[in-house]
Structure formats: C-alpha cells, structure tokens
Amino acid sequence: MTKAKIGIVTVSDRASAGVYEDISGKAIIETLNDYLVSEWEPVYEVIPDEQDVIEATLIKMADELDCSLIVTTGGTGPAKRDVTPEATEAVCDRMMPGFGELMRAESLKFVPTAILSRQTAGLRGDSLIVNLPGKPKSIRECLDAVFPAIPYCIDLMEGPYLECNEEVIKPFRPKK
Image (cartoon, rainbow, N blue to C red; front, side, top):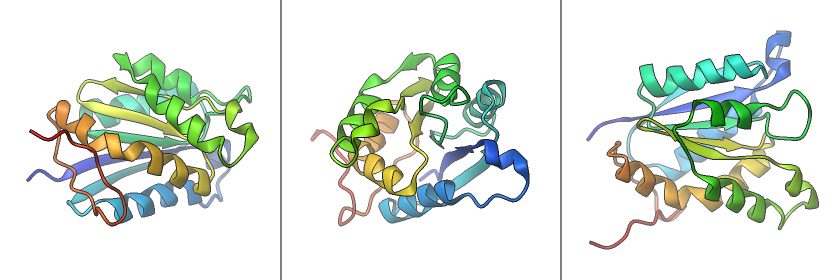
C-alpha cells in the first residue's frame, strides 16, 4: 500500500513576521491523525497571504511532491488580503463547489458569520485541494463534514487508499 502524502498549507500574514506559532496547521495534522489509520506523510508549509506564493506552493505540492490531498487553512474570509480561494481556483483544472457549500452549511450551525467564508475545493492533476477556515474549532467542524467524501474522491483519482478509524470518521465508499 502506498503511503499517502498530504499537503498542509497555513496561509497567514503573521507567518512572515517571524515569531508565529501555527495552531491551525497543527489542528489539521491532529485531526488527520485522528481520522486515518493508514500511513500518511504530512508535507507542511506556512506561507504568507500572497496569491503568487499560494499558487506556487499548491503547484509544487501537487505536481512535484505528489500530494494526493492538499488542505489549506486561512485566507478564506472577505478581507482584501484573503486570496486563498483565488489562488486555488487559478491552479485547479476543475472545481468541486460542493465542498465549500457543505462547509458553510455546517459552520452556519455554529456561527452566523459562516456566510462570510469563501472556502472552496478543486482538482489539480491527481490532487484534491480543499480550503479550510483558519480557526482550529472550525477546521475540525468542516473536516468532520467533508472528510467522509475525501477517501472516495482520492480513490476515483487513482490515488493512495486512505483507511480511516471508523470509530472517529466513517468514509463513504459505494458498495461494489
């Protein structure tokens, strides 16, 4: 069985300021460790909120580092510097709007400002790219909602088989 490479990208203006503890990226790694029982390797980067840097990072992770899944955190709000969705759309071959729709619907159960979120997802080559919000609590809520579809999506793209801890998260795979 092939070990999955999963890209984790934290987008933050504070990243370029020097002293910065990335709790959002760590929350993604912790959540994926809870979900997955198959072997996986994180490919982890903290980058500034600059569209060209985000695009270059996503392209490198998809095309050169062979990440079957790339998860971003941050840069999905309405602020002028929030450009993660634009960078994702610029590098993807096809968009997967259902991911953003479901994440917003789930987040609206907790906060009315979820409508301000611009999370999206798309496909680049053999990689699924998913934009998550920046708050660790919201990251978990959103991943709990969309992750059941991710292993099957990666199966359809002929990527590595992601085996989950079904006591934590139940992936959906159609019966054969």
